[in-house]
Amino acid sequence: NLDNTEMLDKLVNKYKEELYTSYYKNALVNKKLDTIVTEVEIEDFYIKNQESFKLNEVLLKFRYIHLDRRNKKINVIKKMFDSDSVLDKQKILMDYSGYQDYYFNDSVWASLKEVYATKLDFPELTERDLSVKNKVITKIGIDKSPYFIMIHDVLSRNEIAPLEYVKPTVKDILLHKNKIKFFDQMEQILIDDAVKQKKYEVY
Image (cartoon, rainbow, N blue to C red):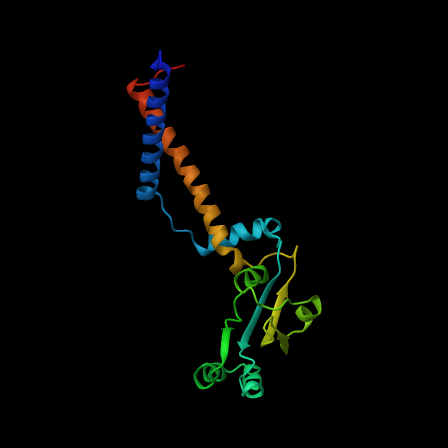
């Protein structure tokens, strides 16, 4: 029922050309772009742009274990949990039943916001809790079951995020910058080639 489809046809062809161009660029990038970002590049970018990596959340290095309240070995487990021995951690998991959840990777920075988001029954940590370092904190969950928590380190909001935490973000930024640079170089090569062969039009 359309009287004139000429304009629509032009738009469809324009969109088709843009789609092909975009697909070709991405294919070329995937094939030709060097996706290797060195540690030196990452560290250099991080050092020069530290103010851009201020935290808007609390990070902490910690470990915890969530026990069934009917567990009869709670005091034994608490004593072993207080130990820094890897063998004690393994022994807790192998020899004692009744734990519901645990996290022992206390050498890695974790987002407290993500902990709350993924562990809905995780007890809220107060500022006072966060100030207690390297001591076992006992918190009670919603179902009255105990949590043993040990905090090793804390970074508050507006502090600079550690490199190991933002490294994936820095790498993505550098790859994106390289991608834009690659596109610019590619377009300039095409323009120079077109000028050389006189295959171009001026609008």
